[in-house]
Length: 108
Image 1 (cartoon, rainbow, N blue to C red):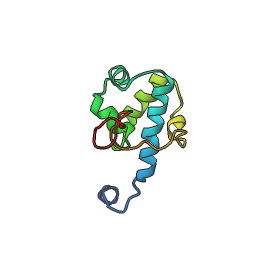
Image 2: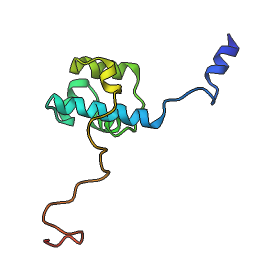
Image 3: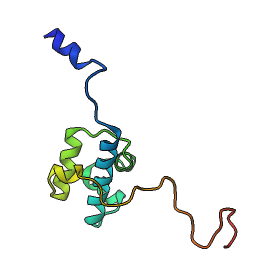
């Protein structure tokens, strides 16, 4: 029994690949947008903090089974829906630039 426990703690056990977590987060965001919800609305619906939801959608959070179940039941989608390749382009980091302004902040 102890051997099984120690094997579980081994650093060599298989971990989710970062790309899978990012795809899962983007799939969650796509489902939210299809449902017509903002991040604030979805976070409240699921009982998550806004920061936690943002980390999920940004691929920075490795979800628990409980969180995954909450998300899929709220949207009425199968778990596999969130694991498929996202249809949207990869999100750009940071805020989008304001229209009509150059990088220096002057009207363009």
